[in-house]
Image 1: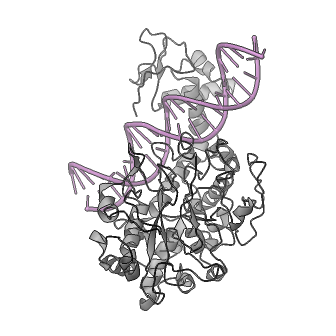
Image 2: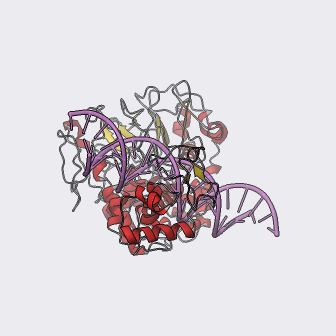
Image 3: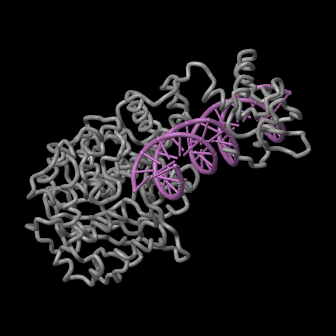
Length: 530
DNA sequence: AAAGGGTTCAACCGCGTATAG
DNA sequence: TCTATACGCGGTTGAACCCTT
């Protein structure tokens, strides 16, 4: 590794002449010989010295290790080495499926509390868990998979992060966790009385995603949501959802089902009528259309300036104008369209877009292409179909669906959960079959029947898509009633606002009761206008 | 076989907290 | 009560390894 920063150790070792101080060049400290600390990988000799020391003196007082043993390592490094590699009863090797299941459950419950999680996994270290989770998170993010199975999604609100996530509630109570868990944020989508989605205004969000977000870091997958794509589909979900996760659909239905799958897995919401039973198809959509149509990119109704929310896979670059600078590629396909002058939700020219190839970029591309199939939409708007008006995009992509293996293949939760979705549209060069197997939970398999019982008032859990955990809100938000996850055995976070009305999510808003497809459709939380 | 890109994992860093003086 | 020190935790880094082309 050879990291050799010259920053002085906080442990301030005083060693001058270590017998091991010359076995490498990874030393830090003063050049006067007063402090010589070695960094980088441990050698066998160093390990032996440390083990010997701990055998004699026991754990603790790590700074004394260097003093008494001559080891040129700071106490911190010694502790880490011992805890992660040298102490007895450490379990090495890959996690077993049981352990993986447990990790997922623990993370759903605790969040990034690696040490606490490790306490439940004998022989495993927090570092192992952290690495495992980060790897898994990347994998899921890349594949567009949820981090938690649906039955855990309601749990997936770590205790320390169960907070209210609504304007007026979090109102700068230092609600850095809003819409975030592990950094994944959740843009909310509201629907107006016509079922037209728009993004509500969230004051004081920007700037709260700094440290500790996980994804607020340079490695984060930040996400701007000034404009949020929301799709409405002509097809009734009930027709397609049963296919979801059950294998190939008939040829005639394949396009629709795939489109539906795509939308569902990517969190595109259906808009429903007031009776919550009939989806609204507000933009002149031909309900008989057998093609997916009417994909609408809704510009924020109120968003002003950068409202940097976070979602997976995407990274935006904030421009000096407070806008999120779209990537050139994305601009080519999506953003080049002139701004809409429609009163309806529109695809703004400054629609945020990924700065790098990502989930939403492809989704938006996909959806945009699909949207152009809606002739009504096309003719009634100033929308320029431009480069991607050719519906061949959909056709070709739909064709690609057929090229993927049986989505019901049990080899991967990816296949179960998002059959054909990723491969067909998100990452063309990353077939679903490349996704490593994940621990399966049968509850992931779509329960189409329960899905039918869902209606639009259900709050989507976009965070569950990738492990985020922010609170979500029910339709009853107008009454300032907020639903937080109160789940079996998982205490509600103690940092919830006292004003919060916490209810058990056994209402129709229950994430648990929501079918996977509906949950997957939860990139956007559905909120009423209030 | 080599190159390039992605993944894994050990280790470091900074910060917060606990504790002793 | 204040300060210094030790410890623990979570985030981040980057070399080594692996896989694909």
